[in-house]
Image 1 (cartoon, one colour):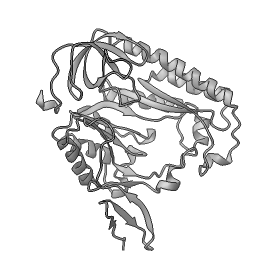
Image 2 (cartoon, rainbow, N blue to C red):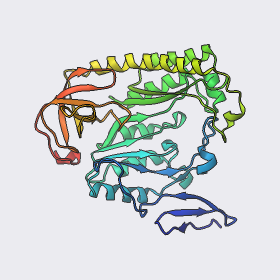
Image 3 (cartoon, rainbow, N blue to C red):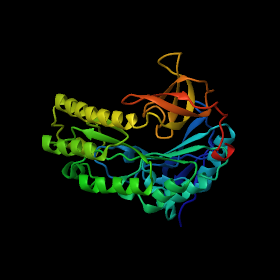
Image 4 (cartoon, rainbow, N blue to C red):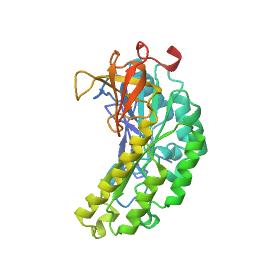
Length: 348
């Protein structure tokens, strides 16, 4: 018989292995928490651990195998956060697309999004960290159809080279990724896509890097992060020779970022003259003369900002902003109408 979970003094649970040995801690809605960021935005962890064998990652070695939180527990925490004033809920996991499989739940990510879409008080729900080969039709339909779920995905692709991806133990190819992106954008009109890449992985040749460069040019991501590979103990890649010179890694990173910068600037210029809903986050950290906020297509801290140089809005409020100027990673605009207090879509 399977062992029952033990409840900790802090409200979480620790799964017991059949032999009585303790596995890893699994967070619970009963665990006390305090928001480290602004009161209108919060992160909610839907699982712990990971079953993916990525050669560059040590997470499975210290966080254990994938363990989904019960959907009712996640919803309970979401309701608590919404009642406390949270309006933007960011769902995180090592792999969000695997959610629910270990619990025997079919279409777990989609069913979770549809449940959270019913939580009164929330306005934006954002899903992070999708694994490319598990993006299902049911998940895309949920993103497209749920009123509070923003049309945004974070899907780390890591490389555009089939051979590098094989060495990374991820699989896939540039052609398959482009086909996936086309399917995602067709299923969710207006979808914003963020991704990340690793350059300089052991054995990466100039020709293999060029495949990644080609993918970025062809895919035209909304946002992309680029990291240079570094050896990490406890990973499968640690046994491979770190044979790409540091200067080559940095050069490849700069090349990718330069291409992405041009793409992002072009996409931002297409937004000039249009009006978007913006979550105001207060005075800009760059100057007290501007307000700063984000559109639904901009995740906290990583995707740039909308700078408001005309009009007023209180922190935590949602306000329509007419875009007047574009930069590669930021936009400038003016408040189109008076701001309203934070609230769910049905509070308009």
